[in-house]
Structure formats: C-alpha cells, structure tokens
Image 1 (cartoon, rainbow, N blue to C red):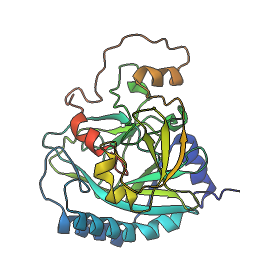
Image 2: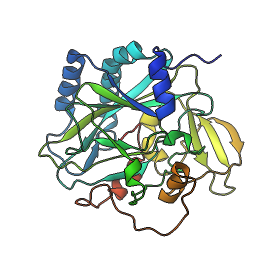
Image 3: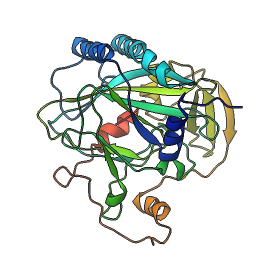
Image 4: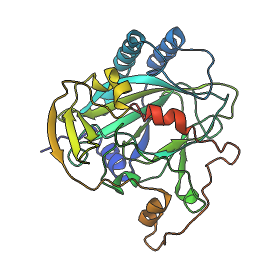
Length: 307
C-alpha cells in the first residue's frame, strides 16, 4: 500500500483533485533566512527572468540548494507524510523586460502513474497579477499521460480567447506556498510592479519513489528511463536541458509509447468535449506584454519549477 503524500487528508484530496493548493508554509524566521540567503548570493537588479541555477557557479548553486533545502525541510515535514524534499533555487521575475510565461508542464521525475511529486513555489513577498504571480488550469494534471524532460520539452501554450475563462490566477502571500503537480498546466503573469518578484522554489517526491529521468532516443523514438541520483537534476541540468544524457547514467527501461504534446485546442477539448478544433488567434494572458520569454524558458525547461 502506498503511503499518503500529505498528513492531512483534506490536503491530500485537494492536491490530487485540483492539481494545486496554497498553504501557510514558512515560519517568520524561515522566511527571514530565505531573504538573507537571497541577499547574500543573488543580484539586487536583473532583467527578464532569472533562475539562480543558470546564472551562478556550481559552488554557489550547491550552497543555495542546500540552504534552501535546510530551511524548507521543517516546513515540508509539517505537512508531508511521505514527501521528500530534493532541494531548491531562486526564481526571479524582473519588471525590466518582463513578459508573460505561457502555459506549460514541468518535467516528470517519478513514475506519475504510481507515485506523486510536487513543486513548491514560495514567494518572499506577496504576489498577485500585478507583480508576476502564477496562473493555472485547474485539474489539467489529469488530462494527459505524457513524458516531459529536456529531450521531450513541454509545449509553451499561449491562451486563446476560448481558453482564458478557464485559467485561474493564484495570489500567494509571503511565507505561503503554492504546491502544484508537475503535470499541471501553469504559467506566470508579467511583473508590472517596480520591484523584483522573488520566489524560493523547491521540489518534493514521494519518499518511496525512485527518482527518474525520461529521455527520448532520437534514433528509434523509444522512451528511455534512467535512474537519477538525488543531486542529478542539480548537477546535470545543463546537459539535460540540451536533451543529452550524462555518461554512466543507469538505464532502467526502454519502451515505445504515444507521447502527446498538447496545444490550446487539445486543452479546450478536454475542458469542453463539444469544442471543435478550429483555427483561432492566439493571445497572451496580458495584452500589454505579448512576449512569451520562450527563448529563456526553453533553456530553463522548468528546473524544479516553477514559474
């Protein structure tokens, strides 16, 4: 029998039914420690989208990852029955050269048909639509069975007029956590404030699950499943986002499978079975900021992410 992911049955139900929830997560002192960590290693000014894992040395990344993990560990234990924290990074959205991040899914790092994993999105300041909070498509983690990784990136989906009413903006206060399923379609608004939107992001997996990496073999189109060590996604992210496999990674399984890459119309068909596919003009969540930030985020791919 698989152990529950969360200690509270209500949280367990909300997470698996909706694909997300917002919970009071950090104590005041823990939030202060995260702010001090950010001020010690991260920039006071930046442009566009900034992920600490991509713009710092391996040594700084290890320190930041381990410290975030240490700070969030107590909070994770307060809520999780079987959720194991892997680590974390900082995700920043600047008001300079800001853009809408379209709907997408994060990588699956466990067998999602058996075990759960969850992303933690913990802002260091209150967030809403004005400063780049996230928006989600509720229940969408249950729409498709697919495999997502650097070799099989999630499509970035700009919202059509028909899709907009289904999206939900999630306001998250400092110290709270937006906890969401990696398969949930989500994005973030532009930052139209005058300050950085700073988030401490973490990733948890079921403690009994094997950490995995799904890779597409470009020659035979088979899906290969590799065993991933706990520091695999931290140490190998730059190779993984290029669709490459690090040497000496253990291959566990190879199989052939359909791997859907949904677009806006596919989502609408799931939301409304009577919806008929047709050509529609795509528009961003914010008409003021139509840029998608695609180039940057195609590099990042969703390193435990969230945003």
